[in-house]
Length: 156
Image 1 (spheres, rainbow, N blue to C red):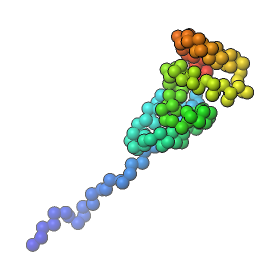
Image 2 (image 1 turned 180 degrees about the horizontal axis):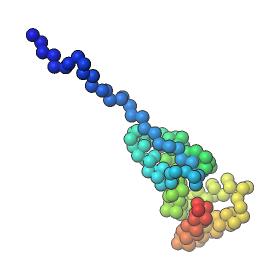
Image 3 (image 1 turned 30 degrees about the vertical axis):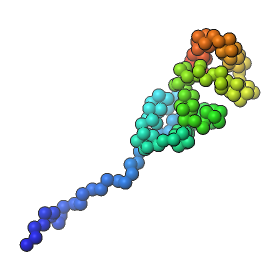
């Protein structure tokens, strides 16, 4: 005689899904957004870790797909060498600019100026040129101060 250990009316054990559907909201960069840039970047880093996204091209593409409106325009305006590297895109993100831009300014300012020259306001252009001259004179402390002031004006 067989003993049935599982009664007929019991439900089967639920199966775990083969993949985990995780999403994060797109970031617009608008002041009406519920996310701050820092919150979005933290969510994005957690999302890519959870979904096992790795490699420069995959990270950059995934990052780009999660941007809309002004944030997407910012990304699309980056020089192609910044957009192709996750590390440089990450360092160009607005919350990192006060920390990392002084390091990259001598390299990327000549790339940025021709791009924005036709549409720059004269004050912005003057400030950029002052920064460039300051860096050429090796007065890093003054350049950092000027850049910090510029970024406060631009992002506030």
